[in-house]
Image (spheres, rainbow, N blue to C red):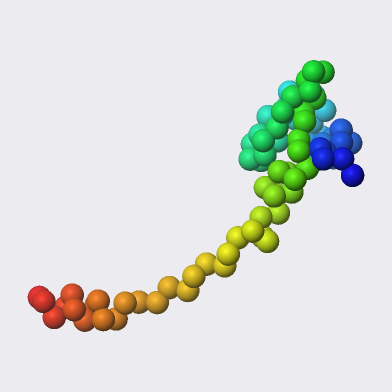
Length: 79
């Protein structure tokens, strides 16, 4: 497996877009860093693409929030 996406993979990702400039704009809007080959075709690094499109393994679950009851009592006791 190559370290960059093949042109077939980029075409599948950007379907129905076929022009290289349109594909570049589309991939950039996805939040993926994309380079440009000398022929104008997009160049996307596989690792960055997978990290951007599949962030589930990288994110921590949100912390459970609980009310600060001591702070609330203190705020009402001063009034």
